[in-house]
Image (cartoon, rainbow, N blue to C red; front, side, top):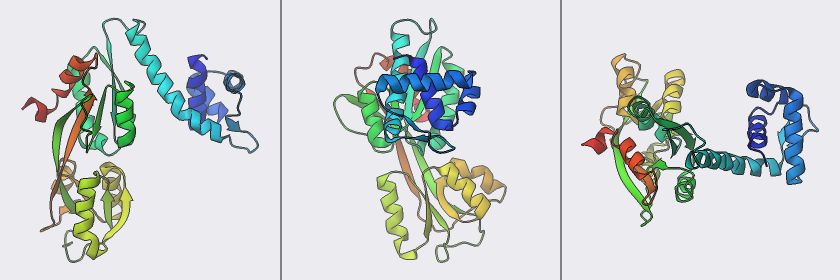
Length: 280
């Protein structure tokens, strides 16, 4: 099976439109259709339902999406290992839970770009369980999560402790009149604390996976949420957000995990040293 067939399939699975996929891939529509047909013939299944005006993934197509992504990651790693990739360059495959990207990883990626100029980054988002599998199977070099596994094969290292504070768009909000609270996913230990402390108030209205989504939501629609302090600082200074006085404060530890016997162990450790917490 040719890699370009999988690349084309993934593009069509995202756009669900042959013309748009062709534009994105700089191919003709006929070439895209031909590749999809060839892939379907090789697999012996139909990947798209073409009975409606808009393409739709079949059950087999949905299953292929995950495997296709993993195969493309493996192909990138294979190119590096056999020397097809750019000479004197290293590839670092980074995986994380959705909610951690905005908290600490955006700045860290920028530091890698500035300080490790021979490193090419590949980032992916997975669930905590999937992250462990990706690290063990060597599809991800380093992963970030809230609650790391404790096994002999995996090294885990704390990279940050993030303070969380309750902020509101309402200057006069207190613990007694909390409403329209957005619950952000910070992992089981912190989530359970917040639910325990606020269960009697019936204040939680929405649940969101990322702090950035919750921040943008309350700034637009009003409300309150527990957000990382560093994310709120500028909005508090401008008077757009206000700390809720007397509200409990929480903190969330973030961990990096990687294989103890990874051949990229030194590269991973060099990258982790760019976190202030690790350096200190």
